[in-house]
Every structure is written in structure tokens, then in C-alpha cells.
Length: 248
Image (cartoon, rainbow, N blue to C red; front, side, top):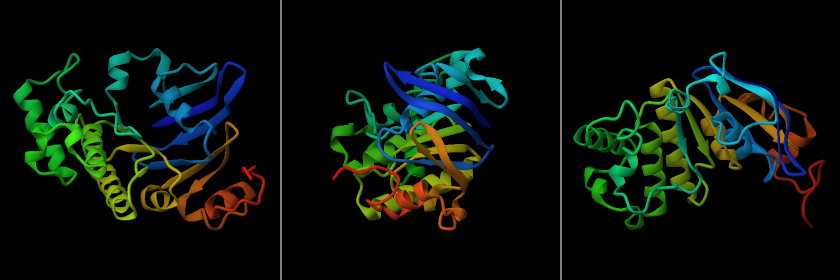
């Protein structure tokens, strides 16, 4: 579904991506791991076209993303943002239905609300939540609303940026289960960025480790504990000692 070839991106003198090669099969769940500042979020932005790569190519179903109609291209994606990124001035259902009421294929307001309420139900939120505002919700509820918005337009590809950040272990487990269930249910292709190894094991089919702007290791999630790659071992085991520098 997604193929990246020699993707490079710099911001001023800082090289963020240094030639990323990655293939994400259709219907699979790929999780990107790596330390802070290794280019994980930049990679998602390049795929979405929010920032242009300097060199290399990104393809979606074999087509160069840069040559595709912008609105049609973005309509294939759903996104769960790290901080929720809900619009404070809109009600919960209006947040969920935001895309449904815009663009060439926009739905009537009543239909969009009906879809939004159904998506909220799918993530475990009752209809009475629909008329509340984001400020009236807990962090866990906001994350669920963000997930409902990500799936509202039935996207083919869903990106999850640190989906369990700021949540307690129980809520993290709930969100992980929801993500896994929904991705399988929809037959969607998923890419997730996370530091949470519990999320990796719960969500991933495939895992890729990004280090210093390159793919250091990639493989099935079942191979995580069998690999002897020193970078991967240090990250997975959370050790201060190893080839990845740590602050002391």
C-alpha cells in the first residue's frame, strides 16, 4: 500500500531523514519505533505531503503521491494525533464529522451527525457525549473522540501518532485493543508511531526502528525478541548502555 524509496528530508542544516526505504503491505499494521528526534513524525508528514521530501519517492498503491489529486489523496487517510487536536469551538460530534461535512463528497449535516454518533459508539462513547465540547471530556475520552474522527470517513490508511501518550496503563490497553479491532474490522492499512512497547506488541504486524534518519531494523513483531541488533535490543529493553547515546 505504501512504498518509500530513499526518502530524505532536512530542516536547515539538520538532516531528519537520510534515505528511508520502507514497504507497508496492504491491510497490515506497521509500527515505527525509535528515540525522540529520529524523524518518526517527519516521516508521516512526508507521506501525507505536509512537508515535501528533498529526495526520494513515496508511492501509494504504486502511484507517486506527488502526482495525485490532493483532495482525493488525503481522503484516503485518517489520522489520530498525539495530543488529540480536537477543535475546542466544535462539539464532539462536529469534531468527528469534520471531514464528512467538507470537500466534494460532503454529507448533509444530519447524516454526518448520525455517522459521528455511530463512530462514537464504536469507540465506547454514548450518544450523550456527542453534544459536549472537548473541554468537558477527560483525556481518555478525548483520545477516543480522536479515534472516532480518524475512522469516520472509512479511510484506507490510518496513521496513529503516539496513541497512548498521557494515558494510564488501563486506558492505554483499552486504546490499543480498540485500534487493533478497528484496523482489522475495516481492513485498513495502519502506521503507528509509539515509544510504548506494550502498544507495539498489541498493535503491530510489522515493526521498523528508525535511528538517525534511517531504518535500523525491520521485521515481524514476533522477531523483536529474537533479533540481536544492538540498537533494537537497547531500545526494546530500555537500557542506558549501548550504541544509542543517552543523557547522563
